[in-house]
Amino acid sequence: MRRTTYSSEINFLTLTVVHWVDVFTRVEYKDFLIRCLRHCQQNKGLEIYAYVLMTNHLHLIARSTTQDLSWVLRDLKTFSSKELVKMIQDNPQESRKGWMLPIFFKSGVDNPKNKYHQFWENENYPTALWSPTVIQQKIDYIHENPVKAGIVNEPHEYFYSSANPLSPLKVNEM
Ligand code: NI
Image (cartoon, helix red, strand yellow):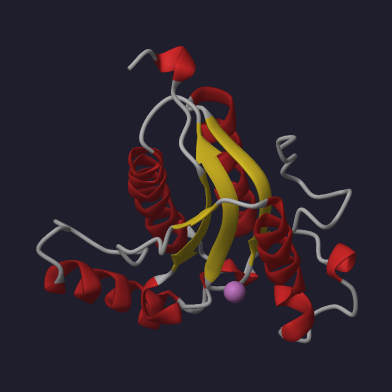
């Protein structure tokens, strides 16, 4: 298959931190993951149409235009998990490392797919979205996450969301 003609279907995806650890309460970790996503948009053919980053999971409506979507996500997760664990280790302000790091190391030891630590759950729960109606339903659903979590009143008020025009991650046009 020629790279230029490859495109996967649009998928709804959820990347979850192991044991639902609330890593992404800190801006530096959130901003780092946003940079990783931007890198994938710019260099790996990942098109992101909607997203929301919660404290312990990331929802994406996305597809890949150059390679298997699962490969892009695998690389994203491998790279980001290594760096995020390092950021937590090296952060003198991080008062939670005493309980967070053992969870990542223990999860890594328990999983034969992982040599050192595990930050993300293996599963991305991909769901192919075929109709514009279903895509819009999923977009509305993920944008509602911060409202349901009681963080904001309206979806557009949450910074790390494609519902917010000032979102640090610019999404692709569908
Ligand atoms: Ni959610």
